[in-house]
Amino acid sequence: MKKIQMVDLKSQYDFIEKEVTENMSQVFETSAFINGPMVQAFQADMEAYLNVKHVIPCANGTDALQIALMGLKLVPGDEVITSDFTFAATVEVISLLKLKPVLVDVDPQTFNIDPLAIEKAITPKTKAIIPVHLFGQSAAMDSILEIANKHNLYVVEDNAQGIGATHTFSDGKKAKTGTLGHVSATSFFPSKNLGAYGDGGAIFTNDDALAHFIRGIVNHGMYQRYYHDVVGVNSRLDALQAAVLKVKLQYLDFYNERRKEAANRYDQYFKNHANLIIPHRAADCDSHVFHQYTLRVLNSDRDALVVHLNKNNIPCGVYYPVPLHAQKAYADDQVDSRNFPITNQLVKEVISLPMHSELTHDQIDYIATTLLQFFN
Ligand SMILES: *Cc1c(COP(=O)(O)O)cnc(C)c1O
Image 1 (tube, helix red, strand yellow):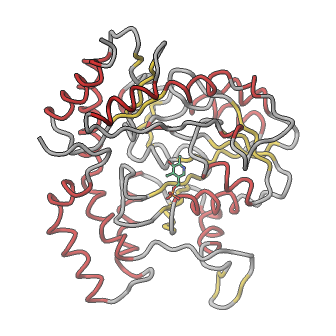
Image 2 (cartoon, rainbow, N blue to C red; image 1 turned 90 degrees about the horizontal axis):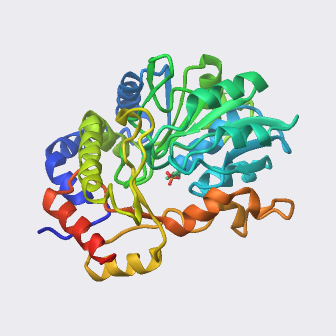
């Protein structure tokens, strides 16, 4: 059996080596390393895949979030509501822009932001909500969009973990995550479902004026060469990464299908175990693309389970071990930890197993049986 890894980019590369090399040679031949035809071709493919009007590539997912917020022209002190249980980048950019992050608790089943908690946190200063499609599962977007509509708030989706997921609205309509709110951000970090061979990110929106404004922001606030209308940043997707992403985008649905199959196989082992809760799928499986396969470990010692797996050459992850409200950088005296009962519980219980498109049945069976031995 092949060595088990959290993500196995090398095995994936072996299948697409020829196409990647050809695309990269094209970039070397044209020597258009910044912007240029490869970036534009990837952008167009991505727009078609998502069925969204504008994809604006940038340097990484954190930049994408920051730039999306800059595009909304929020002013210092404006409040932005987001999840207490996510990667720090989501809240980091809010603070960097001198906006006020308002963290709220999550749903115990999906681990996604709790719409009821959002409503309770709204004040006259609230301007935006950032739902995160955590671990690859669409947040409760029907309720979130309804709340945003009612209170006139922007919705900025953090789609870094959800690329390729389809959200089914209560009326049956379907759309890809990242195209549901006003603007959204994604990451092409190598381990993401659509990963480059280095850093990359993108902003998506259906709003023409916002797209135009953002295209200037990513390019030093320029709308006409050497005329700087707003304070911008320098954030670009480099052409070599676009060359990789253009190949991998063709396989994204296949990769995500493979992830779902792996998740379903894991489920068979864990679904009736008294100490384990398998990942919940809200409504339909299309809404979950399993960026992570995350179990809750009940009435047991999660950290000892991590040690047990590692001892048996099985890597695993704890995403995330600390709630954001308890992180030094984001701790706020006025925030009461008792407002986050779910997150406080999840950080003690969650464990994420190896998950990628090249996991074999043998590997999954070995991981699952080894994990179950822990409880015997
Ligand atoms: C990965 C990730 C980001 C940041 O993406 P980078 O490309 O690493 O900057 C932001 N939010 C979430 C939820 C992520 O998982």
